[in-house]
Length: 358
Image 1 (cartoon, one colour):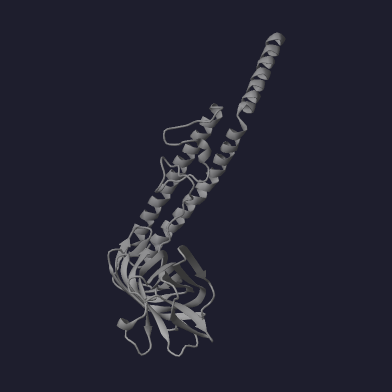
Image 2 (cartoon, helix red, strand yellow):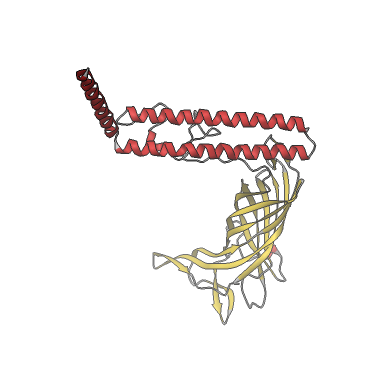
């Protein structure tokens, strides 16, 4: 009997040694992945609880509005609670399977849909952009029930010129086709009224570059604090003044929108809708440059003059756009003169197209 006991003890000891060696055989990189996946289990619980919180809040809002009864609200709450509990169970099962694969395979494990398990670890998801509950490089967050503020990239470009005091635009000394502007910026849009999206407040910042190309071989010269056009002593191939402004536009935007209602959130969409925006902007001149190209004794010369040329430091003006969807006809007019302390004021005017890419 003692001999059998000794053999059993020896067998248990061998098994313990083998298990210890098996643990040690897991590569360090796999251990790190396993620890990351284990940590994701808690994240899954937090995410699903947050989703449940938002869904219950949405149900309560519908109950307060009288859209559903108390009984219906309780049924809906039980359904979303059950769904989230099953989500947790299924997603954690996926994590456990990934851990088991890593523990059994010393060199990692590749599948058709996962290039490498080392890329799994930022987030495990069960919503859009995921496969079998695994979402790469993203964290699931529930959508806000009512999102009153959105943002988008603004891009505009077109023709540029100047309105000169006492003269018509037809008499402008600047080329119509050659003088252009470009604007790029970021804008936020906030719904003004709680239960209507007809009026929106749009605000942000933009970088505007206004270009003026003089006619008739002329260029800008500053003399005695006055900036004037003079004829260049050689034949100019190019003469262009570029003024760069950092401005902060503000517009009130009106127009219809489509309301999209879901169980847990709603949104107003202005895609493929008419929009009219009216407002203005104010900011700073952050750079002025005159570019000249000409030939001298057969040699091509390029000059870039970056001195101020007495341009206005503080800029402000009016602007507006008329849009359908994301594309708009855009007009802006500087109330501030282009040059300071002039006998005759010149004010920049631009017309072109604008894209609000939300």
